[in-house]
Length: 304
Image 1 (spheres, rainbow, N blue to C red):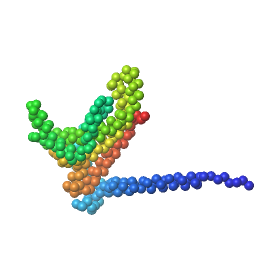
Image 2: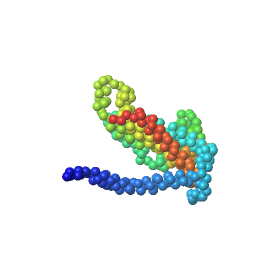
Image 3: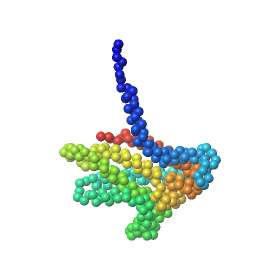
Image 4: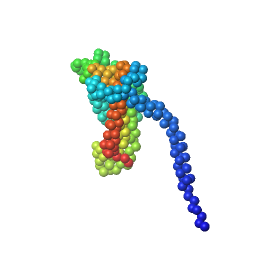
């Protein structure tokens, strides 16, 4: 009689299931935190966007898509969309390019370069509130540093935060300064991870600095640039603190970005339904922009 062939298939299945259960056990705290601080608030926001609420944020009357229809017909919300788009265009490309230029400068092997690296990265250690107060004095129409320089050379002072044509630019300059430390530090780390042998080979071949920058530095730095661009875009859409301190959405709603519009609608006007609808709209905007960036931008990323 032939002996049955023993296989370790049941044992293998048991080991795999045990590994899955062990992994889920380790991930359970993270799942709990995400559920409490991310998934539940997100689901609650979507739920409230279909209701009219009272001042405590309790849903009273189901209105369906009327909150979204109200937003599409609201002139104030259209101004918020315009301000947000302009703010993103002002801050993200400029901030990344300045951070890249500073990273390239401080990546050179020069004595004492660490001092400049510390200076350029120091904005990471300053809070949004403290930075905004400093820039509030710099933009002051009468005693501000910028207007002092302009009047000293014979120009007229500018109402930086009171003029609708300058307010968003002023907020953008403040935001670029605040975020440049993070972008600079990440890009500098990416530059220092590039293999030096590539530059040595190009130097032997007589390649110029611009050629090495275009053919070696940028391609090898592209994953880091892609990360910085993605994070900068998301942060730009979520800007709030400096707008609240410097302009409070004014003048004439020229700096009323979507996040500040959500805050004002919810905690000033107590319209939590329309504020939730704006939050859902902002989430969809960030999601679409991020997906498009991964779909089209990642094709140009050169992974080693």
